[in-house]
Image (cartoon, rainbow, N blue to C red; front, side, top):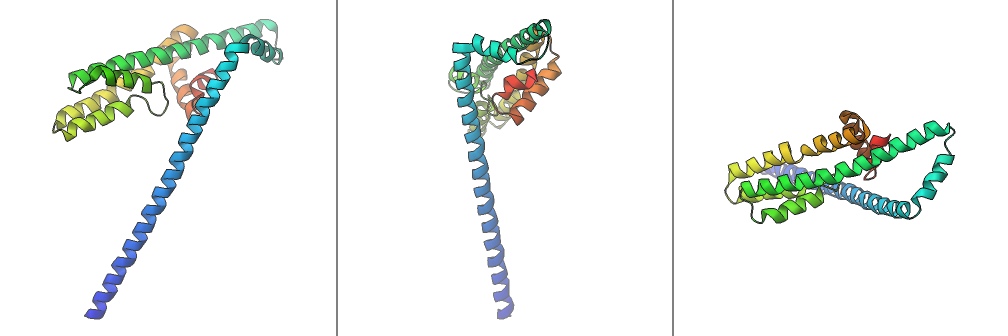
Amino acid sequence: YFGVEIKFADTLNSLFSDLTTTIKSNIISNIITFTKTITNFVAGVILMFFVMFYLFIDGKKILEQVKKQFPIEEGYKDNLFRHASQTIQALFLGLFLTAIIQGILAGLGFFLFGVPNAIFWGFLAERFSLIPFLGPPVVYIPASIFLIFKGNLLVGIGLLAYGILIISNIDNIVRAQVVRLRSKIHPLSVILGVVGGVAFIGFSGIVIGPLI
């Protein structure tokens, strides 16, 4: 009897030890992956700002040098670069217009669902909407959790649903329509280009993806 009990206790200790080791391993692995992701993201943002800085300074010279490398007729070359310029302008216009609309919708949602300082949180959501992989969910998800923990379960769930269905989804609609109107690219191509570009290239994929 005592021998069986001791073996059972040893088995439990062994299982607990294995489980603890597995959890530690997963936590360390996730921390490393998260750190790499954040590092790559920050590096991409810094690189993008450096590129933009030099493009603002010597943009025309760089453009002329790039155009010389294309082995096509001048007429086709001019059309290509004109279309690329229109697409880039439309992408940036769509990015900032979407951020403004998402901020307004977020602030309205926070006000309607009773979140304190709704204007401030709406402004914060508008700022985060400019950052890929983060966006307004960084603001409205904690706000929903806050309401739920205060005892307003239905209100918290309602804000979360409002955020997912309206605030986050308006991004794809507004940005795609702006690009379609300014550069005559199909909205589906814009959405796929942005998603694929961000996934494979990073922050700069917002612009490069649809261009490709």
